[in-house]
Length: 262
Image 1 (cartoon, rainbow, N blue to C red):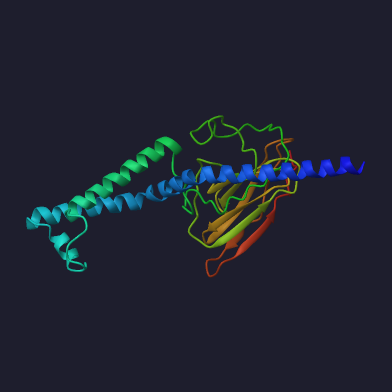
Image 2 (spheres, rainbow, N blue to C red):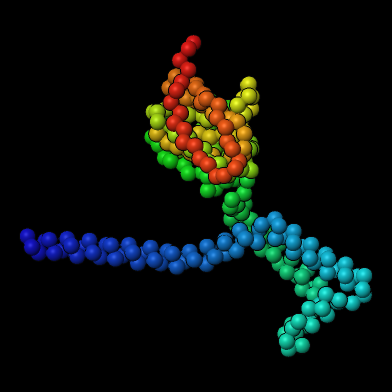
């Protein structure tokens, strides 16, 4: 019995060690790819590409106007030793850098697809905190059909914003956390309080017992309307509430009051 127990413990130890070594090996092999993808995401920023090409054009314009490498001569006054380690013109070097960056971005796009965006107004990464919920059978059709962001035209599988839909009223500092305490999925729309019918400023899906945070909400007066995507497809609306822009604020709203009138 003791011998069997020792063999069992040894097998577990060896298995755990082997898994750890395999995970470490996978991480080591993945590191170059992760580094290259990180560089690609940084270089693919529109302002960086535009800045490089703008600088290259400016250097060439100075060359055409002055008839000499005026920018390079100016930069040489700040270098030591005076002899540059690469004998090239400033406009040629900048054009080469811009072309190399563009080539790297094109190759990265072909290999890894569109670059990731962080913190942009159209894709608020930090605000989307999807919470996984139970699988639900949606009885309400997805209202917007198929799109490049949603090729099947289906409701999300977890809480999150509806991709491809407007992301408006996003210049403030207020957070609005929406909670779904029920057992049915919810289609949520943020609307101006006096808009009737509602023209959604933001839209999200809340899985059963899930939540989602609307970030950077502008100063103004709003209401939230919501509809069950499964079950009886009941709808409801919060009371109008005001968002002030004097300081960072937050709201926590459980969406549970439905209109049961026929």
